[in-house]
Amino acid sequence: MWDELYFRALERVKGALPRIKGVLLAYNTNIDAIKYLNPQDLEDRIEKAGKEKVFRCSEELPEKIIEVPHLLGGILWSIKRGKAAELFVESRGVREYMKHWGWDELRMGGQVGIMANLLGGVYGIPVIAHVPQISKLQAELFKDGPIYVPKVENGVLKFVHPKEFSRDEESLTHYIYEFPRGFEVFGIKAPRENRFIGSADDYNPNLYIRSEFEENFEKIAEGVQLAIISGLQALTKENYTQPFEEIERHLEILNEKGIPVHLEFAFTPDETVRKKLVDILGKFTSVGLNEVELASVMDVMGEKKLAERLIAHDPVDPIAVVDAMIKLAEVTGIQRIHFHTYGYYIALTSYRGEYVKDSLLFAALAAATKAKLGDVRNLDDIGKALDVPVNEKAADIEDRLKKEFNLDNGIAVVNESQLSFVPTKIVAKPKSTVGIGDTISSSAFVSEFALRAAL
Ligand code: AMP
Ligand code: GLC
Image 1: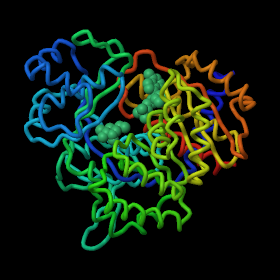
Image 2: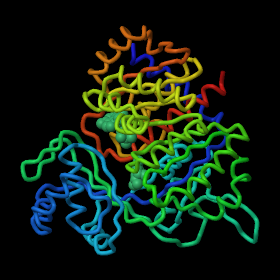
Image 3: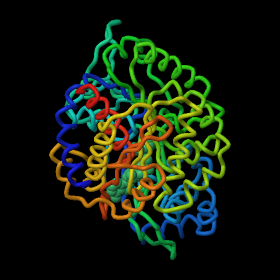
Image 4: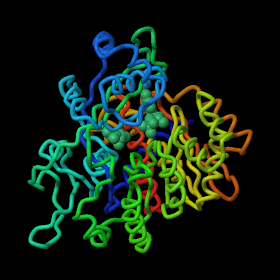
């Protein structure tokens, strides 16, 4: 059944995408320097930096990276658990160390950068992107297509492709250390493929907002139909106040204009910031998150038991997911929650329609393509993902939802809201893992509104 639904969803979405005339993407863009880890090399580096200290750092993540053992300990922390983590690299010395260690591939990074290349470069939808620093290298990583950044020349606001911005600003590099499932050092084995990120970047972690955006936000918003906000995850209780004021101002403008806004909720370690995000969630139309992120939200909402249930099982318990989504919708009033995990997605929407499910199916094809190739090059690539098998464990998940909520053909009605479920396609040996979540959330949000516009 699902193969047929996948095929039909792809056809429908492809036909509908041209209906979206503009998407605003703010705020984080950077360069990802991807290193595929080698076990021998990593063991040698750990020995050299001091095995004992590195192992200590791998027990509990340090707040930020000040010395090499923090970096190597962080990498080991991720390998041990098969979980992603990201730390700010404060020390110039460690930044040099990472630069000398090198990379295998340079890629577009940051939620905004990744989504701009996908929506603008692949789906052909005009996007306006916030890029904190446009270095030559950063600009070159943008695909050709309708991707724009605001530029003010002699007091006049223009929109140009980042390659035409022609001011060489700083390069903001995030070093991504990727490892496959089963990767092993000193007898420690990765239960799942994942990555550790060290960000050598003084702009994105502080949510630096360019003057072009601050001064012209109203005009920038005039040209778009949808907005996606991301990059709030590295803020802390010490520095969040000012950026949040600016974000709330932007949200007010977008709300006044009736522009639906999606929040891409990356893992936000600071509890104060996370609480504040829950407080303002009602100003967004939509939010996208995975199980760790949803659990962290339940945690600050005082739902500790629910938070534990969300991370206790693999695959994630779908009943816990739905309970948490309902709580979040009740408390914040947000209309759309899109949950994604390894093997399935669920959306809870205050409105009803088959198109919600179709957009999730399309997103799963885009995700499988990104996992397989590391990049989505064009819509034909996405079509090839139809051959990737549907996750077999998802049948049990679907059965549980059928029993609990009368799920029928992937759709149920719960508390007046619609619950849409899709089993996803899982690529057995993914090229890399970074940016798949962004691919899923932006594809689903934008294609859902494209399908709605076609009704
Ligand atoms: P995030 O943790 O937000 O970056 O998102 C990662 C998401 O990517 C997971 O929730 C899965 O839905 C998806 N994913 C991860 N690995 C694969 C894979 N090998 N094939 C397809 N989808 C994947
Ligand atoms: C975070 C990282 C960035 C990466 C992105 C992928 O924003 O800082 O380096 O590209 O996540 O989702």
